Structures are given as structure tokens and as C-alpha cells.
Length: 113
Image 1 (cartoon, rainbow, N blue to C red):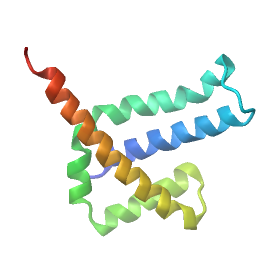
Image 2 (tube, helix red, strand yellow):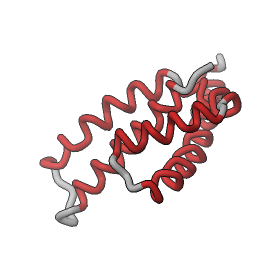
Image 3 (cartoon, one colour):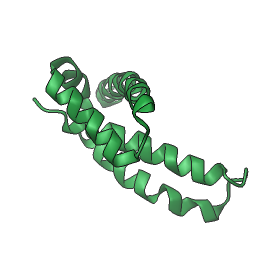
Image 4 (tube, rainbow, N blue to C red):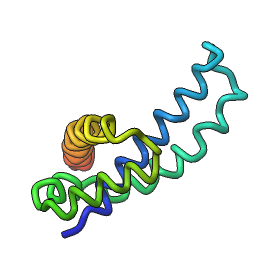
């Protein structure tokens, strides 16, 4: 099945967090901070496209794919080894929740009244 949609979720979360860190450096949010979110916005678009498949990808993930995700996070976000695992676990939990909520929302709002 692959893990491409999981990677897209991880990338979005990482880019959003990086943008928030940059934004909060001066402890104020202003319009000059909006460019920090451009990369996160692009990542969000890709993440939403495959969000319905994320739960299945998690369920189908093997050790090779898990190692690939770890390497992806290390390369993408330059996190120390001891923080990579925790970041990934938190993103996985959030990703599953978001995917389930999004899929449910599509069902609820997509029903004809």
C-alpha cells in the first residue's frame, strides 16, 4: 500500500510547527509572519488529498516503511535522533485522529439532506 500519504501528513505537521516557531520568536503574530506558512499551506494541500488512506497505511505499515518514515523525518526536519521517535509517534496519533475526523466529516456533510 505504501506510506506516501503518511509522509504528506508528517510533512504538513512539521512545516506548520516550524512556521509557528518562527512566528512566535518575537512573541507576536502579524501579517509579516504569513510567508512562514506558505510551505505549510502547500503541504496541507497534498496532505488533504490522501487523508482518507492514512488509517489504512498505518495499519499496513511494516518495519521497512517505519524505518523509511524515521529517515524521512530526520532528513526533512533535522531533528536529533532522540527526538525523532517521539515526534513521529505524536504525529502518527494525530494523523490517525485527523484522518478519521476528516473521513467522518466527508460522510456527514456529503450526505444529501
